Image 1 (tube, helix red, strand yellow):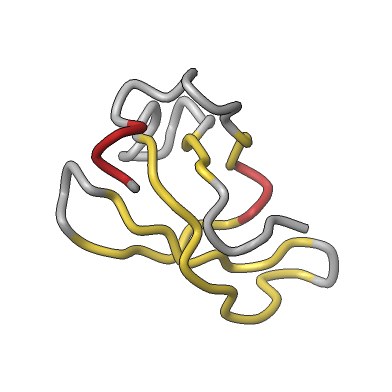
Image 2 (cartoon, helix red, strand yellow):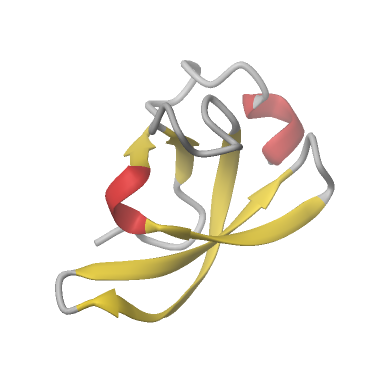
Length: 71
């Protein structure tokens, strides 16, 4: 499970935000029994969106291109 404040990237080729980097700001219940809706703040869009946890990948510190903009 992703913790609040974790830097993540959308990693699904058919998702409109594919490649976008954001910060986990909340969890909003189950999409399916083993897939949760995660609320992600995207600094590049200046908005938060609900994204399924299954299409997110955790970014290590410094590997995210917009890492400084998210802190």
